[in-house]
Image 1 (cartoon, rainbow, N blue to C red):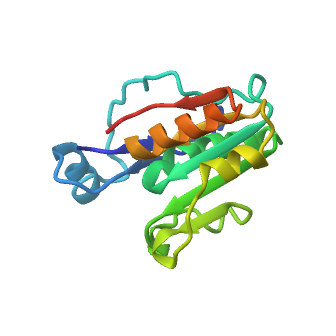
Image 2 (image 1 turned 90 degrees about the horizontal axis):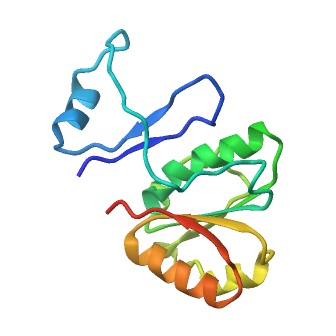
Length: 162
């Protein structure tokens, strides 16, 4: 499996792509052979999990592990448009936390340190009209959608890619 996530904010004029190291031929080439002057052709993204600042005024991002990479683009877009956001972010080990310097106000949870993200706690803490974007492993998304929707959070956005 090859993992690619656009991390630049929408409309910024830049294109930042996070590429997960793997044995996938394109990933190997990008990590081991690609040079700054190389030209590559990229097709447009797909899916309906898109943050639009004018349509999603109350942004809540909930990331499990590497699921932070697509959400960072949404957070950067919110910052660029001076929109508030809240981030809940869980990882297995502290070394897996990404973008720490950029996200000083994130609610972070490290399971190896006996910290646990609680979707029930999140549902009680956020406004019911919040737009929640979830990204992470399928079971993380399934659990989040089930608990959040059962507790009155209706605007849930996610894509499963594993």
